[in-house]
Image (cartoon, rainbow, N blue to C red; front, top):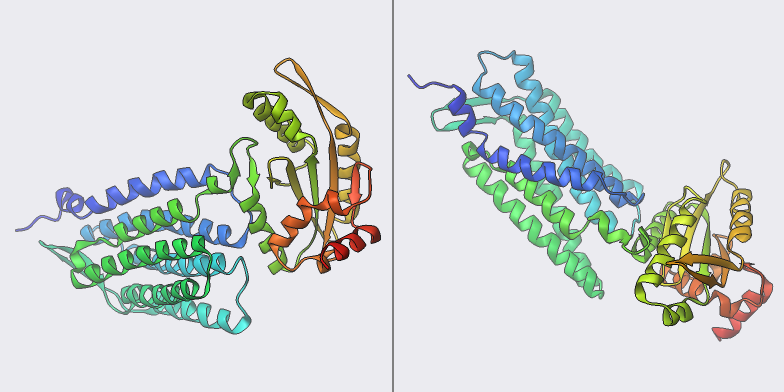
Length: 400
């Protein structure tokens, strides 16, 4: 008589062990790094969380079927429900992540949301009330029925929608970086579809875990690595992160102020000192700036650091003024001690308010350009420079 003991259990979790090792490394690497608070990153964080849940219940479902005589029917069914729910949620997160990231954090309208999440909630009904049966034989184990089959339906629909969205982006977007990223997504989806077809045709293989781990691995390395948002020298967010967070705030209709501190004589400092001294100055300045605010700091160019302050009932523009007063006291004609050398920095601070000043720019790139040219447009000579009538007049004259 065939024995369904530990050796049989181990034979059915070999792929899971390898996949779990990959996912654990990715989870640790992802969650130990600072993440940008934008919608696409929040969705990817959800994807990582449900990948961890999936990993745990992948083992539990195998255990439950192998030892089905020893576990309760409730545990057997519940473990599969959570397992299937986690896979379906991962596929939903994948579609949402790709769509939101490709659309520069722009949200869907109400009817598209109803369509997307309506399908998801229908799958939940099948997960809660659907039928499930279990097969256990010398050749392996698997489950079947209306409940587990939602995996293939959801994976096919959301995967196809993601594929269509990506192909649309390739056709309509001229940006070579976006096209390269889109091709990357397509190759990931093709791999996922291939694994799911094999899983459907040969159910005892139990290789969907490989598909999930490879999907997360490729997406993480190619699209959502937190390090891609970090400026290495200053250990602050970089200009790519700055553009992403601006898209997030503008598309979610937030009011905010951008405070930018620029070191005017940075080129002369770089010419007079070696690269190590220059880098140490940037590190010391960014460290000092971090102590002045809890808000994220963005190094948007070699010489400029920006901070975004959200404005609402709790955080008013008065908070921005308090911050400006504190940095004016510290940074106006500031001297820094770097490697026993005294380095004097000439700085100024510009302030842009959104949407109050938004009539002067139509895109994120124009905001960055405006910040970089603020000194040229402004006739102020004080440390703190804001958008005033003279600046607006100069901008209009430059653009005509």
